[in-house]
Image (cartoon, rainbow, N blue to C red; front, side, top):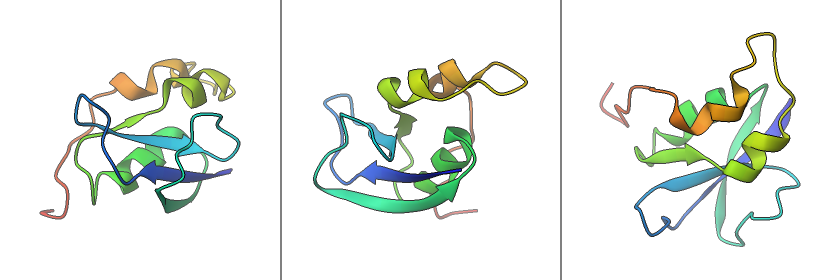
Length: 86
């Protein structure tokens, strides 16, 4: 399990990146999401406030692969982006 954060300000494409502790690209202005076992769970939490959230490419590459082996493409997974309207 790792601690995850989300950028308070969007990237030029409008997405807010989710970072894990130790990421070299983690911004100074961020919000704590919580302690999760993988980036996908942190993305679901981040999308409650910022519906255009994506996984940091740097964090996704360093994350150890699980049994499914899909963690390197976590930013491109199709999750529902309902935000606060669930």
